[in-house]
Image (cartoon, rainbow, N blue to C red; front, side):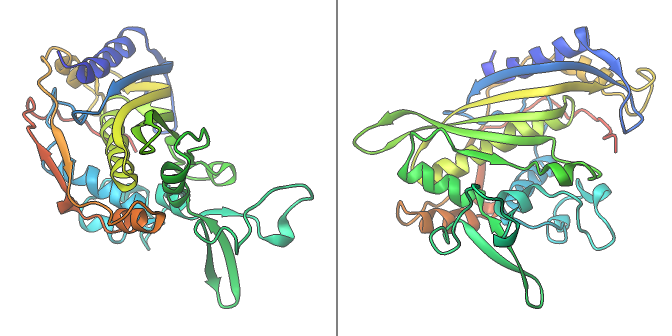
Length: 324
């Protein structure tokens, strides 16, 4: 059986067998376990589950969600034209209390008068390729840091760096947000580096504070593998390995298997299915040069039509209801 699929199915089996029943903010109980981890080779195929159908609207939502993250928007006005998966958490103006892309592309940091002695912060002029000045109201500006630009620059010019980190977690925001980031912290790493070309295999490790095994984790597994493909293409590397740590790995179980929010029956069905060969993902286009400007132009110019999924032959869809 494909290693990518068995890693996920083994995770499902473990949580079903060993999870502790816990209450949570949604009011739907979970079977919860602590600190699960797996890693899969994504160099030849995409880890899109084959033991349930994630094509059609699910695939569309997955890709448009990634494009939404990369846009840096803090609202879902454009994204909602393609998918409603974030609609339950948006206000009337379609703004979100926490938006991954806002922190990916526009992470706030203190301006000059808020900095403490001895702290190191980017210089606006010297670091203009990462730092953005954004007008909040007439005459009032805030400084933001573009983490995607920083990652692309390191991947091109310092691929051995151990500082290729991106966070979507802002502690003050997370303390009060309706839904702070679940997949909060990601680290990239380049292995098998050719000293002559400066190219190698791009690996990604995602640390997730909370993971819904039935619905969320399949999305995150395929989504961050897709992000790895995007950044690899943008900077000249090849995709390598996806590694995933889930701190609270849980399955929604509700009061019983008859609870409409229980994912247990669907997952019990899923683990009886034999995995099929994983599909491949081909990205159309490439940067015009191996520079930061070209890499960002490639990332910012991506459209849904640039993601070509081939060879996907899954088992039938399984219905699970999301706990809001």
